[in-house]
Image (cartoon, rainbow, N blue to C red; front, top):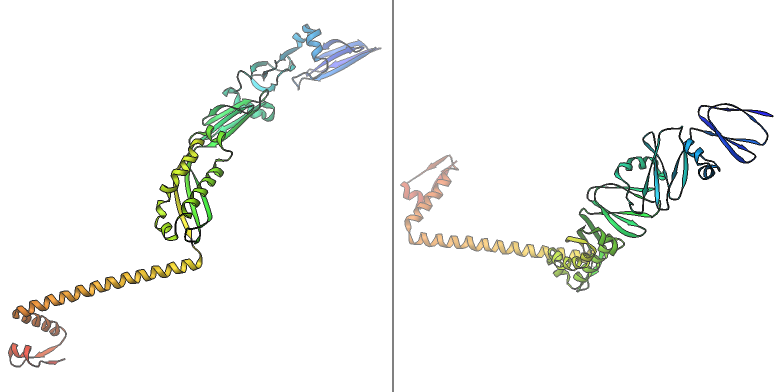
Length: 369
């Protein structure tokens, strides 16, 4: 009834006799009486002991537990960071007891009270990211131009600037929301509005805004873009609906001054700074557009006719002044005649003059080409 038990170099065996713990066998060859004998082998590839005898060893056989194991226990609000040969290998949650075989590696642990210190130390961020879902932490990365808001159990506790962060999720429930702080553009497109003179138009409006207080924005509105969209939409409708089509087209560039003050007053309590609000496009119905084109064409034609008449009046006035000068000065008339003769002479090959210069100017001139 003698039984041989072989324990490999990478094994340990719990020896149980008649359902009572007897000892832990290390590598070697053993001979034991087989009556009522049970063995529970464990591979050292798994550093933690997974056995129903774990708690028994700590409580009833503390000397055996101290010899073979590193015992890690955590309180109700603690986690333990386990390192094997200097590398983070595991995170143990609150109110747990885990036994690690001393023979596997150099084992060390660090207990952290996550209620008093909810943020993960920066030195542990990379190892916890490697552990993934087993890290018992929520990790995040805040980029430049953004702000992070940390909520623990639904309560805002901190704002985060750019960088990497982590918060323990073993006891509380952290939630990290990211707010955009850079300037953004909101497009309010295709808004159909009825002007005061009953003309249906469609307008496109553009608004520039930025979040300056992320906490106030998250606390005040569910969706800041949606709220700003509705605010701009209502303000533009109220402003343009009180004006005629002609007034609206004339005051297109004044929309910012008229509407922006009201929008800014509405959005300021929510930590939003509103910049320029501009009317980008005005789409008119086809018949109204044709009428306006005709009006513009008529106006341009009237302006062209007016300019033409002004030029004709100026030319006539210049001729009248020239005539008066010639009437008062005969010599000027003679010079004008010579100037005309010079122009004619440039265009002919030969001129025959009979009777001298006076005959040339006063009598018939024969021009031979």
